[in-house]
Amino acid sequence: MTAVLSAPVCAVSPFATVSGCDLEVPLVQGGTCTYANFDYAASAPALAAVTDRVTNLLPYYASVHRGAGYASRVSTACYESARESVSRFVCAANDQVVVFTRNTTDSLNLLAACVPGDTVVLDIEHHANLLAWQRRGRRVVTAAATIEATIDRIEAELCAKPAALLAITGASNVTGEVLPIARLARLAHRWGARILVDAAQLAPHRRIDLQACGVDYLALSGHKLYAPFGAGVLVGRRDWLDAAEPYLAGGGAVREVTTTGTEWAPAPQRHEAGSPNVLGVAALAAACDALGGLDDSAVRSHERELCARLRDGLSVLPGVELLRVFADSADCVGIVAFTVAGHEPGAVAAYLSAEHGIGVRDGRFCAHPLLARLGYDSAVRASIGLGTSSADVDRLITAVAQLVGSGPAWGYGKADGQWNPVPETRPFPGADTGDGSAPCQLGAEVR
Image (cartoon, rainbow, N blue to C red; front, side, top):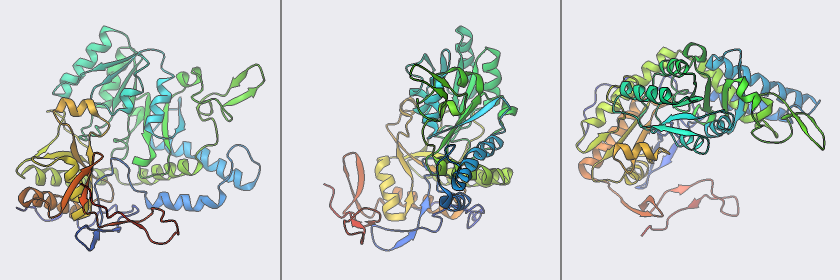
């Protein structure tokens, strides 16, 4: 069986400026092929502009805010100017500060310790936006079958009992469905609450204007924004951040320390104790600068065409079912989750990788309540990014069609919850063999 495909939208992505776009990977049956990355939603590869900026900064890497040497001055200037890049990228208001963190989860946990009251969340959220509030007055609203009915439920909850914050995802990390954040911001403010947007999945695909949308707080991760160097950000209104206890107690977060007390600095320094991740922050700023310079309409059009091509190609295959939360969702970022009847998602992912050189994600995507309410134990997720081409999409559709039509050509087994080829014939570079020479060979059979 083969899927029916129209002429390619484009043979190569017009935005193929990411590392690894020409990566050759081994196949279990022998030979190699160019890697087709459909796992952007988990961790996106670095933009060329990001790796260039990190490479240029490395010779100047030094202490930040703590040295008079030239390298230290350069590192400090780079670190502080990164706040301007992030602020400009999300159109932050004058009273919103940029706090650098490790990732979105870190940002949400930081804010959770600052909120003076209850937080309302949906049950469709990523675990980061569920668990952060668990010990701090979390009120969970069950999403309805439509966005409209879900908004009604959120308003009913805010109306029934005052809340300090509405914490909402910008785009589902499972289905890519985008929520109307400007409308939700107006709703939250109407009932005296502020709004936080988990933009981990939204920011890599959509330009966000915090002022135009009325969003009070926003969290995102560099590793999903083409800056995989361990930095994230929380952007938000200063008052709660200034009033809260420091996220970490340590150097850099203080104005004055005595043996009997401490005068803490205001935000953002108040919540950035310790030696900062200078390279990660520089990478994040570079990604914001590079993405901000792209034609947003062209990027969205490219993504829309590829997503439609992928959904159309998969939906006609027997036994393939696409996941969806809302019947009335009109906009989605580049994420498509699906299942294949008769094949565990983990086995599908292993097959795509081993026999076709295609990388996807399988599992519950740190969104267990959402998968449960959709009626799935797990699924396969294909996510699209700037380096994705129509040729990549066609490869994925064809590979799934072959699986549906004739099954895998190789054997697969499950051990410790992980599906693997049996036997595994591909080498895995990067593992230490003890002498620094050949990569390790994972050839043991899985029984």
